[in-house]
Length: 283
Image (cartoon, rainbow, N blue to C red):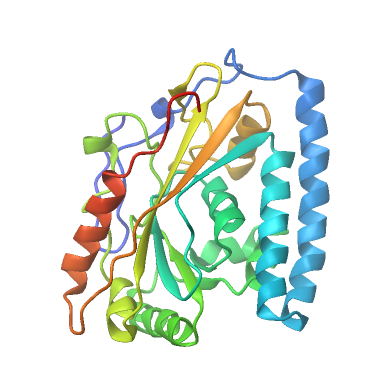
């Protein structure tokens, strides 16, 4: 792994290209299957664009159901099997998850369709940006730290309105499997967004996302989206993966006391996430 530092606003992990499997790895599926998956994914993206246009007109239960069905269909189009552990929250909640890949968003959406906090650059991604805007994503401009308080207030407003909001407080992606103590983004969960949960008395729900190749039964870095890697290259690697499984494990809710320290809450949530079991025998 490459040694990469971090600053206060843009935390970085030590993960780099050497954490990723080489192109043409043995687990890859035939080219014809990759092409079929790509066509299916494009179809789901187009369906998602239509769904995004319709979302503002739908009642809340229908919006959540539509987003969940779309996300599960998109995972299947990629050839990814979804395994869910635990019970997603029914009411308002701040969902905090580790961050490995762009695929995390699809996996989490398939379990708990929530408003997502994402970097501003996602707005400009082809079709994906349209879907993100239609789903009510809250975008954060990491090049302008002064906008962070306004972003936290926006998250708090959504929580007060009874919404679920999903965030990735590590602030960046990492491979998720190799030497986790050193590869994990430093200095850990960013505490700012936890203030929204404290201010609104909203439960914080840790969610752990993990990937493995089913036949071998070992964790994989195939879906990881790291550093300066091109999005299309990462998508191609997932399209070619054989028997890729994503596990979404929902932990017990943490209930912040009035006036709780957001840094302490962030550390508690991070510790709870790290200790959560992901796989069972046979999965």
